[in-house]
Image 1: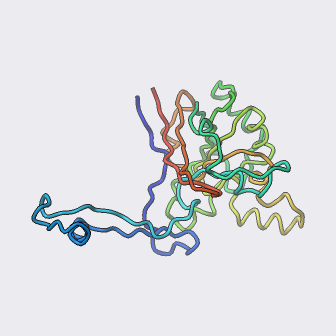
Image 2 (image 1 turned 30 degrees about the vertical axis):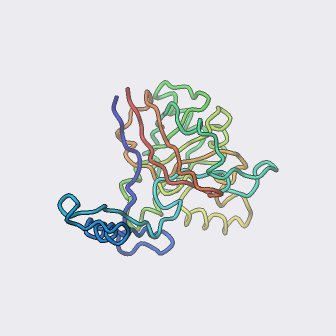
Image 3 (image 1 turned 135 degrees about the horizontal axis):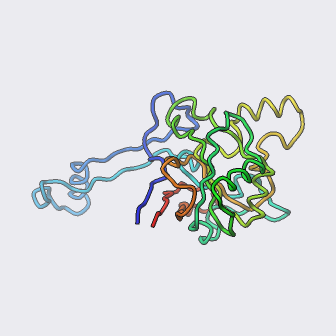
Length: 252
């Protein structure tokens, strides 16, 4: 068995990261741990191996969408088909472990649409048929921009129609190695303002479907088109719109 890590690291954000995207972590040393043990339990450092106590960390700032994460339907809208949208803690665990398929869309430019036709063509290229509860991963190569200022502006966009088609095949979890499932926000905003009507901005997110996508994946280049399983269990955060996830591809 071989495992390929498809998750970005949770780490302190580089200089210049906008406040709304920042991750901040406090690292507490072994010496601090020894002092804490002495204060709490009166055990002096001489009774600890090498005089060291426990090392710990405190994540002081981490948005649920600010690392590799699974979006819940609640992120898209408060209701889906007239019923309350599901939050991350209420989703079936069975969704998050299944057969994976990688669809290569690296030929698509920033903001360019990934259509139903594109998906059909790639499935034909790799001789694969989508099955119920497959986990479909869109490979764009945009993880090469991760931790750079331009990352948020890079990526193609999966159309609402393509998202609906995948859902109709039984797919409930789909992912992408870019900042978002839809096109970059600046491109969507320009189109929405130009058209002046709803349905242009965030169309795939707001497709009125109880489904999930994984965003900010990495290392999809290392995967074969199929023949692997994906584990992508999100953190169980009560009432949340998303959960950071350790996404792993398992090849046998």
